[in-house]
Every structure is written in structure tokens, then in C-alpha cells.
Image 1 (cartoon, rainbow, N blue to C red):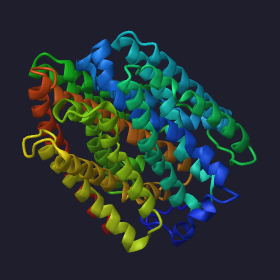
Image 2 (cartoon, rainbow, N blue to C red):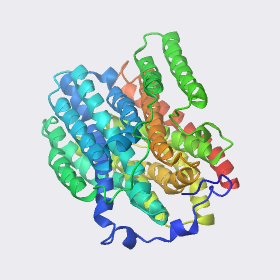
Image 3 (cartoon, one colour):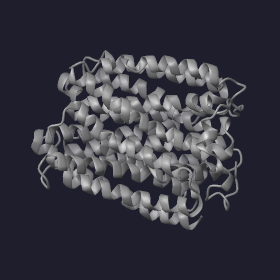
Length: 481
């Protein structure tokens, strides 16, 4: 792995030369499937839950806590992802992966038995820990299983698992939601979980994975809990009865996040690499870009609700339409991963522009006031969702590869885990802010179609600002290439 700052801003030619045939061939193929299968299961579950949530709240209530199903899931995912390096070093790859699958499956069973929103959120919290472990292992195992020239392809494959989720997640969730049996959707992943466990047992043994150092290193548990608390404070703002209380929650959450950064910069045991806190470094720019783009993608949480309430979609159709964003992400990531040099830099810069355009188009189309609901409006909505996802995917493999190559000597494993931690924290903050903006715009009061109309316009318009800010950062990043 390259550790020099000055030369780490671009993907090395050797890293870009590997083909898909080499990664997926006889030598590496089954290991690649074993490594990424947990990410696929995690992604499918995300789309299942997104699709069935409108049915869940109609059955057990809790519309004001709609976004908490994602927020709490991602908050505990942060804890799970932060535990990844410790578990890899202490247990090894195979036992750590099997533990993640077991926790994830336990959370699914809890969700399936939920009688009210409180119990559902408990299940989502447990499931989030397992999901965070699975997501982080997908990235953390790449440098331990593959040579550096395969990294870009492997990163794209991990990201491409979200494409699989666009096929299975909405279908499973929509089928059970339409039949009034949303609880069964949580059981649907259990056979896949058992198959994945068998594959991991066979393919990720000690002979296939390089040893990981750091099993005895202290874990920054206090800072992890502070990060979780900062997200929960922002999420509580959505339930505040007065504007000043909501503002106090947001300010408090931001302050806690800043406190974590301040402690981490001066503590011998880091949660994130120190270079990740400065926009003057390649890693800092990458982490900031990733955060902004992921936060903007959190509008996806409410898309099925808007489509069902304002456009008359059935649950299955709403799930598949929403999945166009994840499909765009996967297509962009997989198609762009083989490029390097100037082509890669163009993709990094073009992505935020494309995402911002997609979100602005959705802000105009989803309220159903610019165009009446119909096939033409539906087609434009799907295209806008796909464009927003494509905007993330185009530069994603190149951004992640730059962060991994910018790691200092001895921080390679820390950097791999930090990528997922940053992504999950941004997703949690984005989900919390999405719930706040939607509720303040009228989702719960006045509610119904009038509230959804206002919430759709405001939510999409506000969140389009995030990729616009990322444009500035991508320009700074490519200037250093």
C-alpha cells in the first residue's frame, strides 16, 4: 500500500490494470463473493425495510418516528463498523464475519415480532450492529485478501452489491407489504444468511486472509458512544414541539461531533486517521465528499411514502421506483471503476453535478404540482432518481481508492474501517436531518397529501445543497492529483 502523501492522490496504473475476469475468475471469484455477500444482504435488507415502512406505520403506528427506523439502524451500525478492526485482530476474518451474520439475523427476528414502533426500533438497533460489521468487513477485507491492483475492482464490486439489492429488496418487501404480511419480509433473508455463513466458512479461512495486527489495541468506545449520541440528539430534534428545542438538539449534536474530532486528534488511540480531519489532505477531502454525497442520498427514506401518498403507487411499484437511485449508484460504480488518470478525475468532478440535478428535478416532480401524476411524470421521477444515484457511483471507487492509498504507514486497517464509519455517520446524520426537515415541513402535521406535498418540495430542495457543496471539494481534490 502506498503511504506517501504526495503520490497518493491518484490511482496507480497497476491498480487500474486488473480486469473483472481476474477478480471473478477461478483464483479469486469465490473469495470475492464471500467477501461481498454480507454487503449484498445488508443492502437488500435496507430496500426491504424502505419498501415496507409505509405498511408498517399503517399497522403499528409511529409516523413521527418514521425516519428513526433508518437513523437508529445506522447509529448502531456505526458502533458495529467501529468494532470491525478490533474483532478482525482478536478473532480473525472468518469468526468475525460469522458473528456479524448472527447478530444481523437476531435483529431481523426481533423486527418480525414487533407489536409497536418501540419494539421495532429495538430490533432495528440490533440489526444495525450486525449490518455495520458486514458493511465494514466488505471494505476492511479487501487489502487483506486481494493484491493492490485488484482494489478498484473489488471496491466497485462491494459498491455494486447495492445493484443486487435493487432487484431483490423491493420485490420481497413489496410482495409481502401488498399481501399485508410485512413481518414475513424479515424472514426472507434467513436462507441467504445461512448460505453466506457456509460460504464464509469455506472461503475466508486463515490461509486465504492475511493476518491483521491490532487485536490488543484499545478501542475508543467513549468516542464511538459520543458519535452515537450526537446523531440521536439531531434525530430528537424531529420530535421537538418548539423550534428552539429543535435548534438546541441540532446544535448539541453538532457540538458532540466536534468534541469527538477534538479528542481524536490528541488521543493515542484514533477512531479515524488524523489526516481525515483536514481538508488540506487527500483523505480529508475524500471523507468530506463521501459525507456530503451520502447525506444527500438519505432523501431515499421518504421516496416510497411520497410516491404512495401523492402518486398512488402500490408498495411494490414504489419500492422499485425508489431503487432506481441504488441502481444508478451501482451502474456508475461498476462502469467507472476501470478508468484511471484524467478519466477518473472527470468522473469524480461530474458526479456531484449529476446528483444535484437529480435532486432538484425530484423537488419539482414529487409534489405532483409541476406535472399531474401519469406515465410521463413517473418516467421523469425514475430518471431523476437514477441520475442522483449515478452521481454518487461515478466517482465512488476512485474516491475510496484515494483514501486507502493515502493512508500512512501503520494506519492501513484503521483507514479501511474509517471509510465505513464515515459513511455510516454521514448516513445517520442525513437520516436524522431528513426526518427533522420532513416533519417541520408538514409530514406529520397537517399530514396526509397536503403535508406530503410540502415535505417533498422542501426536503428535496434542501438536500440538493449537499452535492453542490461537494462540487467545491472535488475540484480541490483533483487539483492535487
